Amino acid sequence: MVSGSIACLSLLLVSCVTNKKLTYLQYEGKPTDTIISVTPAEYKVLPYDNLFIKVVTPDPNISEMFNMIPVTSQGISTSEQSADIISYTVDKEGNISLPYAGKVSAAGKTLSSVSLDVESILRNYIADPSVTVKMINNYVSILGEVQRPGKYPIYKERLNIFQALAMGGDLGIFSDRQKIKILRPTAKGNLVKEFSLTDQSILTSEFFYVLPNDVIYAQPLKGKFFKMDAFPYTIILSSLTTVVLFWNIFK
Image (cartoon, rainbow, N blue to C red; front, side):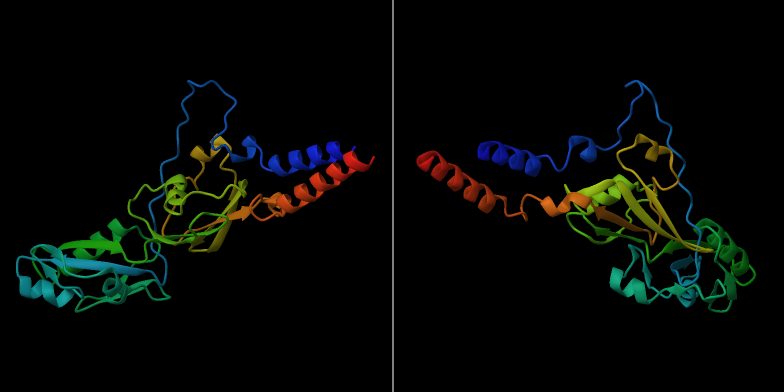
């Protein structure tokens, strides 16, 4: 009777998290099926974004008037910390203010569109300007049941959610892979979406690729209470073993 209780308890402790709950991209179709993923959305600028704008012209003195960050023959001479401060901030109306050029509409546009607009305006004042526009606040935040929660830079344009989670050391064993949430800022407000990473259909979701300022939240499984490194199963099993020992001796 007591031995059976020990066996049941042991089974309970080691079977709280099944393989089905841990496996990514599960699929019931043929192994040869090809899943066509979605094309990642191009990021559109939002109010309060920080933009780095580099203007290059045949005359370096003119270029220096527009560049808040010094440009050398080797490229941009700045650190990430200084770039976060020395940048053009999109105001609440969606505009940036450039020296001599005035306000330029930016919100709701892609970075390439903003670059073309700035070039078009500057051609009224200078000859042959070349403009580069990049995001300064280009990060994704990873929270919850992950190995290393934190804020990580988006180092490439087509960064998918698995690559983002890999920067955080992957999900923890007791993360609920079927209920991952993403918080995404949009022009209409914050959008919250919940999806499963165990289902291969994530490959065709618009949330497969992360965007600047996304927040990924991995919530824990309901059974995390039985986590092996937190639950005092050693004490319980030792106590039951002692009971069984005395039971066998004095029965």
